[in-house]
Image 1 (cartoon, rainbow, N blue to C red):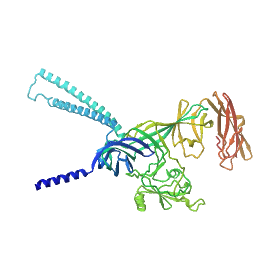
Image 2 (tube, rainbow, N blue to C red; image 1 turned 180 degrees about the vertical axis):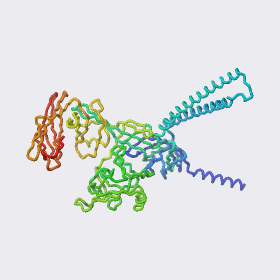
Image 3 (cartoon, rainbow, N blue to C red; image 1 turned 90 degrees about the horizontal axis):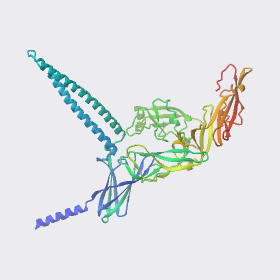
Image 4 (cartoon, rainbow, N blue to C red; image 1 turned 60 degrees about the vertical axis):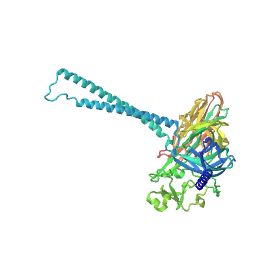
Length: 602
């Protein structure tokens, strides 16, 4: 009786322990929304599941291994309480391979099997050849052989030896062809960052439910290895019509997980999202010298290497030659007048007196681990009238950009293969004024220039633009939103329906001697003709040489109504031409210099 009671108590305790244990449930989720940033992406997953009463652990597997744990956000439906959220990478369960990778691996395996088959045949054939060679001597010295038998055996030997040798040669060539095909597939496979080597990310969420029921959940998190940058198609149709602009997003991702049929957003904001509120510091303004300080190092300071980023709009990166870092950060430490700094774009290049490079033991001995990527020591000029305390880098402001989001109308799919996916996400029209410009001294072509006023209202971003003149592609241009101008100029290339010419007027070009000096006069005739069926506005540009020596005197004699910049000598004429109309202007100037010295005038 006591044994029965004891057994019953044990069963009850075991049952109670089992009923109160936390059960783990794998939840299948789907990516529904993705917001892509210039660096990184925010991924939203959703799922529905059957929830048991009490505490449970929800497991979301086969996620990206590049999730930022600080960015994870979980939204429940109110049927349960979220107790804990954890992120880990599962190295035992690798991410699923893409179909493309599977196909490549299958193709490689097929060729390797074929190569193995051919190699086996070659081994068999070589054995047969060895057998023939070993039995070539069919009789000993004291053994006579019937001539007919000898002839027959010799024929068998010759025919088979030739046959097997040629067969070996043929199969070796087949192996060579298979090897080439295998190498092609392997090279193509190597260009893909195979997800088969990546661990899978796993998010576990502990929840507590009052009762068992069907529930839903949403996950939001940021991932690395995703980006986008803008580009444009800009089309000119007619001088009386606005420009047509197609906004294109160039998206790539290698997060380890494909995005299939997701709602896509494009954002210009940065992805430094965290639960911790940021700290606002004083916004000290300073002059900005973009990349100039870096550029002045290239080729002038031994050991410095300047590389331009492939990403459009990205700035130059500088590193000290021979130094690499396993974490990808090769940026050196800057020391300006003894003060260590991470950036010198604030620094006026005119105030730099000298630069020195330290690397290796000499850098780490002085600056510790901060100098592991090398140190660039900068000494500034002291005592300059322009020197002030504001050269300490606090907050450098070049331009305050507004963050925008663009919603792509239709669902999109982006595979995790690091390939560029280009999609058009917006169409717009920009009002512009058009002007034809020509510099016949340099080129006898006339270029169509579109001038876009208030271009900053069009939400343009830095990026490359494909330029189309009516139905013809004419080249590429670059949208630079960092320019501080109300008008954005875009060149649409050459218009062959407008002709221009520049010729020297010999009767007005002459030389004469005046005392110890000589005076040379130069005259040019510039002609422009409009062969279009409508009137145009054009600008002709030429120049008068500018003296850089007090012994050389230049005088503009005739400009035909043109406007000259006294500092640069640039002369421009604004011309209106009716259909099939031709106009001419004359540029005339003189150069006076000592007669015993030569002045080259173009």
